[in-house]
Image (cartoon, rainbow, N blue to C red; front, side, top):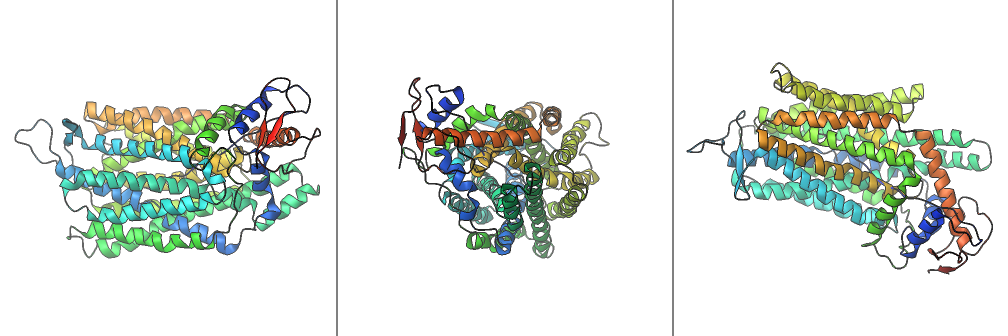
Length: 571
């Protein structure tokens, strides 16, 4: 299944040079006093366009090619299928003595913690662990990626780890290796999910530095464009890059599946054919993904503030961002809604995959056919949605809500399978229908989800807000798999998980309807301006400072009443 993406952000404040310090300035001082957001230097450097190179065609295409390779076939589809195959082969039908081997339609359990646990439950536990580790990664390292060149090196390291784990998965040849398969699956899935987040965090910056967007920004400064007109230009470019990169992910998804037929068809009777297909899939990513690390231009962020390090800055910033996100109510509402939506969609995808893998008897060839169906629909829908949006100038939120409707429909269809065998993921045609619906509406869903947060976050904190976005995505998915696995393990019925998933997806869609993107965008600009004014004022100047004014070094403001002018300067 084609996987998801996501995440990042920050805040701002207001201060005057007299003795009164309002609540916003107090938060700023607390933030900066322990090296939090790094002061206005962070914002000004991130937005100081002349000091950053313009996005080139070669750089943009290497960005697209990375995602073409990082398409999710390996860690998101083949690896889970191989892991579930090993579990099913090592398991037995419950309440049988002597033990009977599992069949495609029978319940199946494996030894677990001195007892037994259903195979579906173990797969969901593995996913829950993966999302837990992803969350820790995003909290720990997410904000650090905004500083220096740490972000580009972090993506490289995570990519190499995922490549290594995918090649290692080829060693799984026997069902008794299911614990090894589980460990390799979790590590590779964590690394894969993290690459999606830190890759996605790059696209707003690429959009801001596109030549025509830079020209529009100059026109805005000269009064030739209004703020609303400029917002429309940048928003469309963000949507363009997001949609094209998503399309490339789906093109890669289709290409690598078709390529794998060259192995799976002639070697269909060879038990090692699945492992060879996984090797081919990973090699495809290596060949296409390496160019991004060669052609990506250097756009370093500010230095890590004094008193902090790359290992600690993430925790500090995420904590402060969570505290101060109240100043961005529309962003906060979107985070809450996306928390529910991501939980529902991610867990629904895993549950349908479990049922699908059982139905096709863990055949990589059948999984490939289904994946080709999904990929072809995904490519058409991503370009189609972008064309429709661009032609009719439809806002991002409206397009996102259209995809949300089908996000709700997928678990609803599965829920119907509790009461009838005619529909509800009981027949082969339904799995093809599922992959068609998923391809047509969930591929654009991922593009619009990340574009929504890019429009609601303050500029200059791309990695931090995309890390928050990734935390929202992955932390929510700690809950869903654990709730659903408990339901399935207790009832021994995979379909019992769908009512819970339908409920949270429906609640999320309703919440997103109330998100006001225009107000959120204005809140973000005001937040940034007030933060700049507070920092500049605290640095010793009493007057207002316009947006973009640079204040060197992290500013530390006294938090005590009556000492509004007490300032020390790091660096």
